[in-house]
Image (cartoon, rainbow, N blue to C red; front, side, top):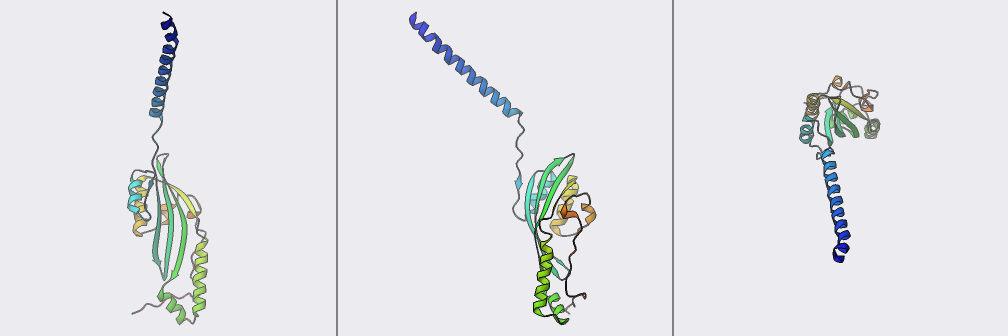
Length: 197
């Protein structure tokens, strides 16, 4: 009998401890069930517009860094952008973009034309440096837009293909990227470069 008395409290203690552990595990399971699953951000490889456009189709959170080069007249302009799809807000897909770097290079036709006008190599080099300084002032500009997923996908495809740019498409965007307070000029010459036969 004495043995049962001595064993009673340790057994009760073990049962209570077991019950508490079981309740704690049950509460943690319920808590995990009520938590929203974390939304994984898609980190697209540099320049992988396909990955980014695929994420845009469902407004899935994604990040992309891209470098685009385009000839504008006699200038080769290379621009590096950082972009994000930030998810859906008020039924629209939120898109963020930032101009990280811009570089301007004169093409051979422009250099030849400037030399024909009597500009020295030093003047031409300085003009190209000045154009790059002006471009440097655009670096860091950014902005946020809200689009339907269909419109965002269309704009990203156009950006990928460099097929068209219409500022009206971006009129509802906010931020320094979308104000038109800067212009790109080519110093030294008002004449277009001569075409080679």
